[in-house]
Amino acid sequence: MSATSAVPLRERVTPGWWAALAWLAGLLFTVLLRMRLPGQEEADVLVGVVFLRWDGLTMLGLATVLALRGSALLDRRPTAGLGHLLAAAVLCSFPLGVTAIPLAQYLAVDVALYAIAVHRPTKEAERAALLAVGVVLGHLAVRLLAGWTAGTTTALAVLSTAGAVWLLGRSVRQNRLHAEETRTRAAEQAVIAERLRIAREMHDTVAHSIGIVALQAGAARLVIDKRPELAREALGEIETASRETLAGLRRMLGALRAADAPATPPDIPSGAPAEPDPPGLAALDRLAETTGAAGVRVTVRRVGAPRPLPPDIDLSAFRVLQESVTNVVRHSGADRCTITVDHRDPETLALTVEDPGPAPGRHPDRHRDRAGAGSGYGLVGMRERVGLLHGEFTAGPRPGGGFRVTAHLPVPPGATPA
Image: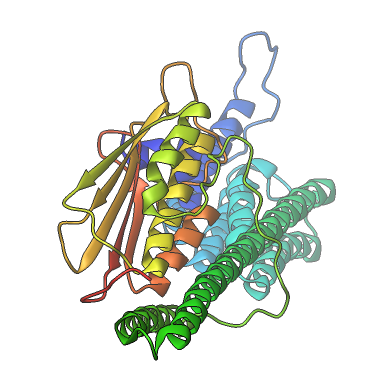
């Protein structure tokens, strides 16, 4: 299924098309009002004097051309499109023998007002409303000044509908802006929470490394006089742990920003796989077991010979895989997924998590954290974590169905575990 066909028809039809359809529907309704339909003794509205004459038909044709031109302009130049539609409504009223612009001829204008109120800035929307109201009032004033009969109640009905659709459009716009602001704020909070989580994990890693350094330094001090070879070995362990810890700090802390307030560690959601302790790629099999207990069978594939990784990269790789599997459990409706850890490139660790899509009898969560562009908040956290390590992250639907998450984490040359 293509992305275009997945979009509802009402969202694929542009405001210009809706305006054109509204004009044609209003024109058809106008004609039907002047015909005796089955079950009627006479038509609801008397035919105007020039309605069926060449000049009347010419004005109707010109009004329709203006309306269709305005509909075409509505998507690119909304104000110009509205002006054409208003001119068409005024021109069309002459051959109808009416005393005011009929509501049927104003339907396309209402569509244009709604579209402008929804999609355009406040000042432009207000100018459009004033223009629409001004044309109706101006038409009414001209008839009054000329001494002709004026359809004041019809004009009031037209103005009421115009005001209603404009207010409805502004309400829809405000709701959309609020929803967008909420999404942006939630995405920012997801990034901050992920960075704080990374900072806490880095704190634990550094504390562990410093503990090793302290123990080895104490051992070296005790044996430096009697067993210098053991002291030399302990000093080597201290050097290795210190270098690796400093390298991890440089990679991570250079990109992290300080947070103003502490964040509460996120709880593992219901149905998500439990976290092995300690987390790392060595715990993938344990992750697969706990995920299987949640109803999703996980296959772990390791390509190439596993190699030791710096603790920050090992931990981040596991977090990306864990969050991806959690998304499968909570949102995909799939009953299985595959984790691939590719060690073949000595400079890059490649990670892939993919699922085949909903299993028979199961349905994806309509709030699934896996938009086609990869915009869910769990995906935001994964992208942030990979970006801090200067890696590459992608997420999106698979060509044959289902979903795929990939991450490539650069591995420093000669990296060794702490």
